[in-house]
Structures are given as C-alpha cells and as structure tokens.
Length: 102
Image (cartoon, rainbow, N blue to C red; front, side):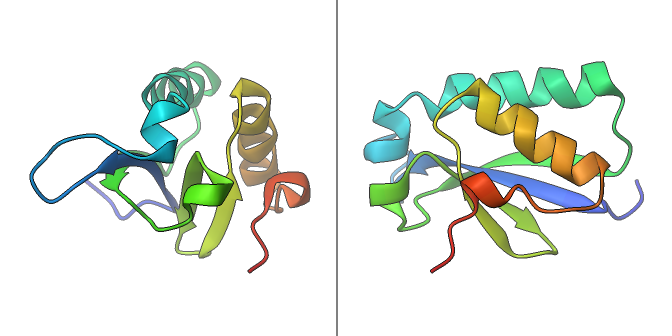
C-alpha cells in the first residue's frame, strides 16, 4: 500500500471503552462515513483513504471530518457536504463552505 494523498478521518464519537456517544454519532456520522466510502469508490479517486475516529472535540460543529495531511477540518452535516469536499479534493482545492476555521 502506498501512502495516501488524502486520509479522511470521520468522527465516530467513540470513547476509550469503545462505546459510541456524543454529537457526531447522534447526528449519524456512521451513515455519512458509509456514503463517503461509496463515493470515493464510485468516483475512483486514487490516493484517498478513509477511517473512523474517536471524538475529535469539535462536538458543536459535528459531524466532523479531518483531511490529512492538509489538516483541514470540515463540518459534514449531510451528503452534499461530502460531495463538495470530494469535488474540492479532486480539484486540489478546499471546500470553503464546510471548512472549520478555528
């Protein structure tokens, strides 16, 4: 496996004991994760890997996704946000409308 160009981490609100709690989970981040995975495959975007994480402490912005190595944090309220973020990745730009600028 080669190093990904973009590694997208979606908050799953996992706690240390493995339980899912918190805002991102309650706002259905797991179904957003599923949509993200299918879109990356459908678009055949090379160099993009996807993972789920524990809480990222941006609960009031959730669901949240971070893109490494860019370090861009995005709020991901729905599938349209995922589409916009993936469009930006394909265009080598940033999805400004969803960027968390803190």
